[in-house]
Image (cartoon, rainbow, N blue to C red; front, side):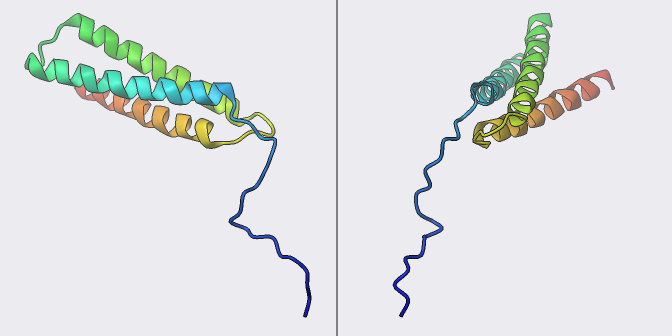
Length: 110
């Protein structure tokens, strides 16, 4: 019998990798963009699609927030020795929101 201990793969792994602040901020910006998007959709629906210019301006502001969050996430993914959870979440959330804003813009111009 070989008394060597085998290391479990599903055990706790200690590492010095940290969550990058830019990645956390990109995820927060993505969540803020989703919440504002849902609020603006509700407000527009309540007025029957005649919410006015301010709702449109706030929608453009939300698109800018999503673009900013996407850029932050991409910059944080290029860092060395980091955990990739928050930057990856930021890329996915902000990327999906940018696509939503583009679809709404295209539908509005048609």
